[in-house]
Amino acid sequence: MALFMVVLVLLFILALSVCTALLRWNELKFSKKGLPPGTMGWPIFGETTEFLKQGPNFMKNQRARYGSFFKSHILGCPTAVSMDPELNRYILMNEAKGLVPGYPQSMLDILGKCNIAAVHGSTHKQMRGALLALISPTMIKQQLLPKIDEFMRNFVSDWDNKIIDIQEKTKQMAFLSSLKQIASVESTSIAQEFMPEFFKLVLGTLSLPIDLPGTNYRRGLKARKIILTILKQLIEKRRGNQESHKDMLAYLMSKDDNNRYKLSDDEIIDQIITILYSGYETVSTTSMMAVKYLHDHPSILEELRKEHMALREKKRPEDPIEWNDLKPMKFTRAVRKFVIFETSRLATIVNGVLRKTTEEMELNGFVVPKGWRIYVYTREINYDPFIYPDPLAFNPWRWMDKSLESQSNFLIFGGGTRQCPGKELGIAEISTFLHYFITRYRWEEIGGEKLMKFPRVEAPNGLNIRVSSY
Image (cartoon, rainbow, N blue to C red; front, side):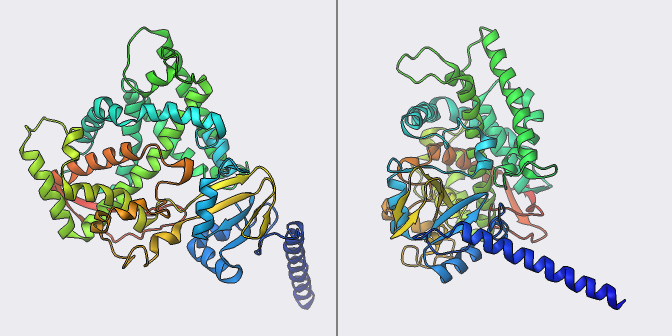
């Protein structure tokens, strides 16, 4: 027994020595003179576990120890983290000067290297132009909003006297609504196979890029292969018939406009995946949190409902919501902003953006080597009491002060040349969903499920509500 205890102690000492040596070796590996202060964690894994589990607390602790610009190793990359508002603005406004998009390798592998978030320079400009044409106000008004209205009306039609998981429902809503806009005719037939694979793909984008069985990264890669097959077959089917379509896929495949950048099939597929991904994350989570915040603030809900009911009374039951219906309502426009602005601010759906250095550069007096990621961490700005008085309060009226939108630290929709191109489309989708939901139903939460706000805003056990007719 004594010998066994001695062996255990020796093994423990050996393991501790190996761990200490590995940590020391990794710190020495990234100890180049002039680097920002900070820690790098374990080889390969870095500090990813601490970053994903502790989130904002990890960032605050590192800032308290090392200042607002420090080094770390997260999501498989050596990373300089900036929590300095002035430096963040400089980084976002100077993409061409040694900086390009720096999304994690897992995201690049799973979303595709041709997606608009990954390319830069002239290619980004051309692809952004093609994408903006798809979701311009004219396109939303004439083609997309009628599809959105029809979908939302049907999607919420059978919720009366049911207990639903609003998190699951908004996920389905965001995905299926986007799919209908992309491939209007075929969306129903491919949705059943496409949707579960898409959900796996989303989980894989924020994971360590280690291709091992059972990991979210491996599941995300497998899901991408299945989705590629579905989309390639859809494109081939479209090319094989002479039917005319008015949807995003038809526009992406069109060869008629001589002035427009022509996308290859790989680029078309990656843009479709990117449209689905970006719309899904923002629309689903914002819609869920809007339902949550409206439930918790009944006076705001009633003010919003009053305006929407007034709009409904001017229409026949079958009449759709139109573009001009959304514009005149002063409080609704504030709540439309709240849906995106106040909910995004308070829940912090987007925590920051990533850039990558194409050359060694100096920032805030420190050296950032070529190939490092720079994490522009913007979460703390959302809770700055000098910008947002009483920052933890849910207050949609604050956005009636239009100066908040014009401030240079307003980064809810990204910054610099990477402003979210789908902002107006997302607002239209969420507004239409809320219109049909709040004019038809009242609801109450059941279960009091816990909400997590990092790295994604989610309810791990769902967010269940009991729905009844209004």
